[in-house]
Image 1 (cartoon, helix red, strand yellow):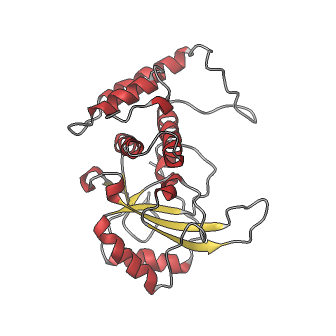
Image 2: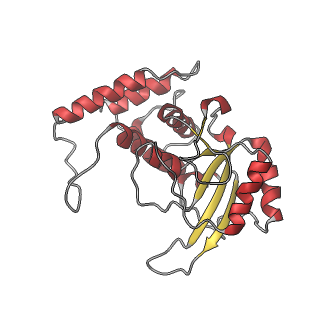
Length: 249
């Protein structure tokens, strides 16, 4: 179980979340809240909010947000800081602004809603978070590691190699798989990064085999079996994640 510890939610934002619940808006957590609960331990702030929502409900969300004084922010007003923001899709709002300094070059808390179609995730692939997992005043859903990684692969498929979005999504895919299936803890003040030529330890080989076994059990949609095959090749070290095929290449 992973509790989503959102802190210091602005009152205006809380009212918007309450309105989303009243209007039965279907939300799936995305970006860092999802990655953290898949095992990716990061120091990123947890008071930025990212959700997937059905495409047809985005206009409702925009209307509700406008009623509370929120207006969508463009890239000049709110520079992108997360991979999904480079998709140029959805709605992005500034919910809190801080004083900019050399120690805080990204002085905004943001609330982002992305179209569910961007990931091709279906509603029946999502699971509702329990009250102990979700502290927001609206219903939020999550997805499994298989659904999340498959969605990330779909997004990569549509992007050209070398694009900023593809590079960032690839990094998130690596982090999701690595932190979910492998022990990335370490002792001391920093982690020693072994060279690529260093042989895998017995523990790492066991973790790799367990990861492959689990990925082999993933149920894929017709025509997407190649995603499972490509991920197994990457996890086994046969190819780098940046070399992942786009299926139709």
